[in-house]
Amino acid sequence: MNKTINQKAWYFVIPVFVLVAFNAAIPLMTVVNYSFQETFGNNVFAWEGTRWFKQILLSERFHAALGRQFAFTFIILLIQIPLGIGIALTMPKKGWGVPVCLILMSMPLLIPWNVVGAMWNIFALPDIGFLGHTLNSVGFDYNFTQQPGDAWFTTILMDVWHWTSLVVLLSYAGLNSIQPAYYQAAEIDGASRWATFRYIELPKMKKVLTLAILLRFMDSFMIYTEPFVLTGGGPGNTTAFLSIDLVKMALGQFDLGPAAAMSLIYFFIVLLVCWVFYNLMMKNEAQS
Amino acid sequence: MKKYKWLVPTLYIIFLMLPIYWLINMSFKTTTEIINTYSLWPQKFTLENYVKIFTDSTWYMGYVNSITYTVFNTVISVAAALPAAYAFSRYKFLGDKHLFFWLLTNRMAPPAVFALPFFQFYSSVNLFDTHIAVALSHCLFNIPLAVWILEGFMSAVPKELDETAYVDGYSFGRFFFKIFVPTIAAGIGITMFFCFMFSWVELLLAKTLTATAAKPIAATMTRTASTSGYELGLLAAAGTLTIIPGAIVIYFVKNYIAKGFAMGRV
Image 1: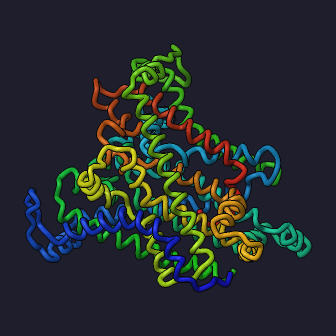
Image 2: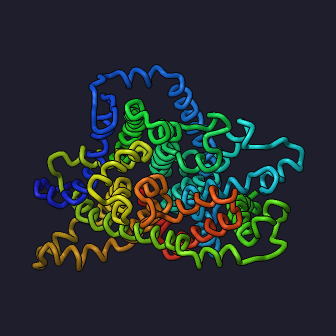
Image 3: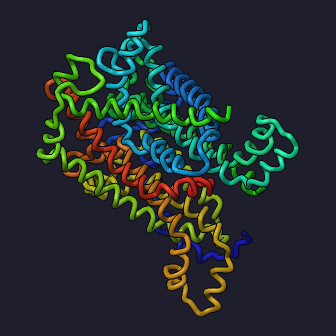
């Protein structure tokens, strides 16, 4: 759409601007403030320069948390995106199955995150949970509260359970926007199922899939509540992702300076990746 | 192969329902039964856990609190986002693209980063432990989302609609509320759904900003851990009840969900 130039449009944006600035700019400045200073309580501050940043960037604890975070995000993207597409492709296109699928599949998205964690905790407990009990009775030595491998398995399974539906819904919407004529043309040309997918369905889903990857990246990178309730970051620190580690540092140990520096580095990484995605997405939109 | 296509979504739905079933199953058992026996359905069916929640005000007020701030947040987010989304979809103005991206960056900000500054900030303006504090703090991620979705819907409405209305002598206000808002009603519905959803499921900020008066149900649930070990039955019942508002909301917007996602803006 060709838009008119109108500087008065700013008036329309003011409420949003004020509300978000109130919520984002002021707290963010507090974080920046802490990140350069040492606090002794009672509002006494001493300038520390970039000391906290250096300390965080060089600390093994941060490297480990960052590594775990990237591994987690990478694994869940690798599972959720193909799985989501696959399920969307097999979903019914009309009839009573559509609302049933949509409603049931959206359910996990609307459950408070700590309830998701608590639910998976009692579902996976080795003695009284369905998952834990079943796995143990078929011969696996499964205990997510003690074995790091099992803790990772459970956390990933929980996230797949929680968020795959988002990818499904997005892909499904993308598929629905394809005109039947495309499929008819493919049939006349004798295109194989794979060719139809590769050359018709996948390009049409490009836009929604970019969005799905972006959303899943962002949210999995910020994940806090669900693993916190499920494993508490344990056993040891094996499932302590960035947010869990950060909250531990800020509210648990009250190391405000390093925690603030870590917040900024953390935020910067998310921002960088999202900026790349955002530009990709805008380019897609400009093309279509 | 086509014949067995229905198997994939069916298996997926079964996988989704299993943990939910397990939670509901537990909610009808006593804590003693949960700990001592493993069974696929309650042996001694009990409503005790639910009775406890509905008769103890610290429990049921948690639900009232959660719903209150979620509704506040949805109203504030959509009301503020409507004019802004209109501006972004119709006009070019100084810094519009940067502003749009800046808004989105807030959706990307990890709540954990903001937890402590929010606590200090809202305490200093005497809003700590109020519903409005949680509602305002959730604007951090819901307003960008609302602007983003609404802008998508508004851009799909041809500009000729606006122009025709002005030619017909409509003032901006009358046009906006009488013609434009009804035209994008579905979009507003979807936006409210997502605002409701993200405010309802968030816990970290809601918990940080409240103590007793506005404590969300999700935070009340963590209490079961401290008193006399885990009261698993109670925890399960409270968890089950948190699924209900979401389920009701989904039921009402089921026809719009696919459409909303199709805008590619959710």
